[in-house]
Amino acid sequence: MTFIKTDNLTFKYRDDEPEVVKNISLEIEKGSYTAILGHNGSGKSTLAKLLCGILQPVSGSVIVGGYLTSNEQDIYKIRESCGMVFQNPDNQIVASVVEEDVAFAPENLGVPPKEIRKIVDDCLKTVGMEQYALHSTYKLSGGQKQRVAIAGVLAMNPSCIIFDEATAMLDPTGRKDIAAAMKKLNKEKGITVITITHYMNEAIEADRVIVLNRGEVFLDGTPKEIFSEVEKLKSVALSVPQVTELLYLLQSDGYDFPKGILHTMEAADILENKVNLKSIGGNDR
Image 1 (cartoon, one colour):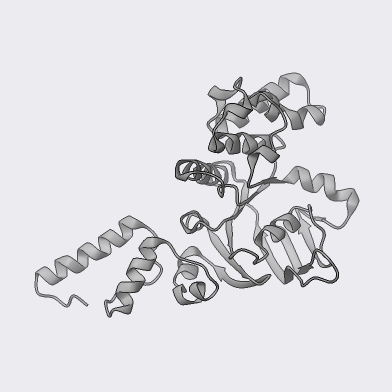
Image 2 (cartoon, rainbow, N blue to C red; image 1 turned 90 degrees about the vertical axis):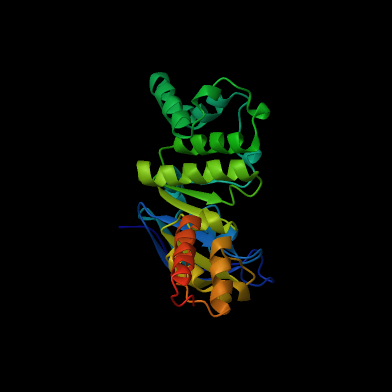
């Protein structure tokens, strides 16, 4: 079932400026996990804001959960079903205590206090922050703040969450934690996840990867399909996972390796087989 659909989606910030997003038509399936890649200025963050109705297209359309984002009367329903986590969690945290921040949205929706207590506890548990419920938000690390921001979005019980470069300001540990949280929300909660990222190791965990270039869809496919196109990705200033790059270089040097290897252990098994084949006098190419 399609949850988000765009039709010839086009956007620019000013009339006298070039289009940032150009004629994008795509469908995001409910319960899917999609990564959107692109170099700086490719339009990926603008697309994220269009997909959840923060920005309105200059032409074309976006439908989220059956609602057209250009219909003002439906914006509230869209915001309920599609939440967004931004790059800087400080821009999203509104309270000085963790549990108060997560409770902010349901309180403003008029949810009864007993239900709010359960919502807060469940959302904090989902992101692994239940032990920090009474902590001051300003004393948390960047990764912890981002998990609280995710819990705040979860409190709205959305069907979809868009992560707009949510790991960009985090250290490797924080990035790993948030990436794991995204995967958990998708696989265990059935939430549609869309992540805007420039970290290739995050993108390989997705079901689908969309690559933008100059506001248009450049590539669209599974992680294996996309990262098999090493030269195409390099042509638009994007890299590939390190292990993919290694096997690509060996393949360029004449070795026979399959394309699109994404994981370290998979590459290790292939290399080990090559070494064993050579040791028994086989063809090492």
